[in-house]
Length: 263
Image 1: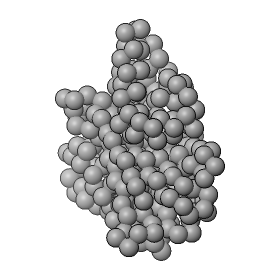
Image 2 (image 1 turned 90 degrees about the horizontal axis):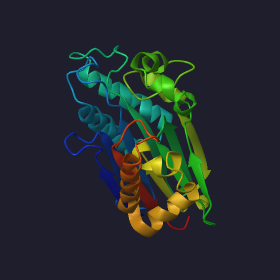
Image 3 (image 1 turned 90 degrees about the vertical axis):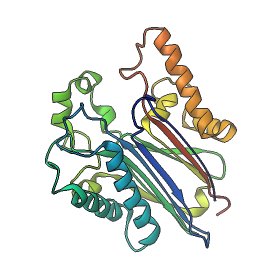
Image 4 (image 1 turned 30 degrees about the horizontal axis):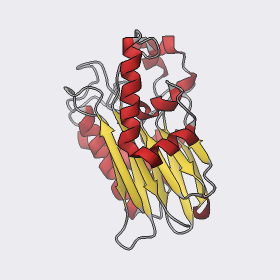
């Protein structure tokens, strides 16, 4: 396994709320990737005394430990347990029933000699590259179905957050793990994978610079930091043109590329 990771804050004056880890046992033959994108609440309006980076670090750390050590558990089961652990860490100090209690999007991938498992919750992206170079995107598109004008309204977004007919994120309810997009691929059918927060996937989804196969090509040729720099350049050009293609000038952007090698 060979991994390449890069992350850039959306605003250098604010903490980066993304979280990423790629781990491989010393014995080799398997590994895990965890990618989180923390949801930024209005200042001081989430019922929690902790920061979003505190939450993503807690949840991300638990997901990494469990996905590496509990091969007997499914990824959905691991997400459920990690959410429960994280909730217990601040249940006594925070209002976990608040609709904007700290939360995050989730990408999990885990592999061994025979299979590659995946889980995606909300709008981060997992890309699976096959030996012939074709790329499959694993997406949870429920947030994409919400009209932009709704997302610009905090009250309207809250009515759809972690609700049936809306979209789901990892917050304080372990049951949300059952809403994730999950699946398993034969190990021989995946030679590499990549995970992107929506700040990095803008290259495809917002600016339309190419498709997912093209995006994987950029990651291979220029590395994860190269893709993030491309996104920042596109954002700067868009700002010069009036910023008509986005409602948030910059976002935390994180990408991880993992070469699994021959299956």
